[in-house]
Image 1 (cartoon, rainbow, N blue to C red):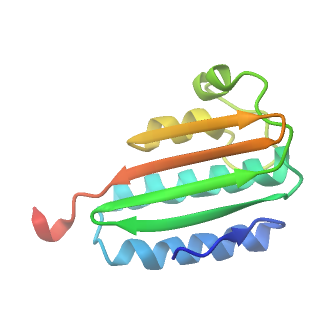
Image 2 (image 1 turned 120 degrees about the horizontal axis):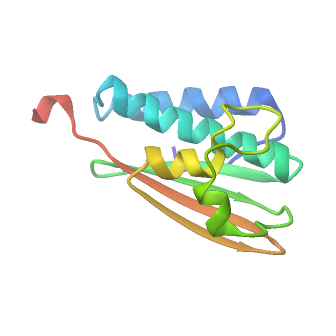
Length: 133
């Protein structure tokens, strides 16, 4: 899935999660790896709804044995990106309330670019295929 899925409602979140489930099946991840990716996608999508008024998208792509998730929005940007990444909970009306800090803990790499014109996050998870174990 390399298409951009715009996140304007909870239904869009369900749709992007179904797409990422299909993409993950190709890699045969462990249940734990699958959950980490799905929770991260959900948190990033909820951030788009809560903090950018639904003005953003999620794009997921498989590159070899990695899943790359890009979340971008045109919201006001993060006031303090480092602090947002380290908080144990986030200020969210939806999601699990782990926000960006949760994504940092669940994924292998997270890159955050933010300005007053919006935020772009690229999160990567390396999958240890069950067939390779």
